Image (cartoon, rainbow, N blue to C red):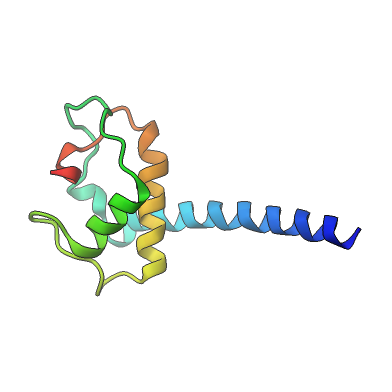
Length: 102
């Protein structure tokens, strides 16, 4: 019986953690670092660019093209959060910004 409650607790905790991560990522994207100012999400690729979380983590951490690296600006947890947000929620955006993956 204890294992059952532990499993339920871990499931609820993990769902809560995932939701928290998405909210933190959303806040970073739209507010804290205002990624949306450059990544307006109105590209002509029609949403065909499906970014993996790992790819976004690499770009945000190390920079790419004119985008600066954020490894000294955001914590590892914040980078993971914004990557989770972009990789997860980005699939719902009608048009993704192709310059994100130049």
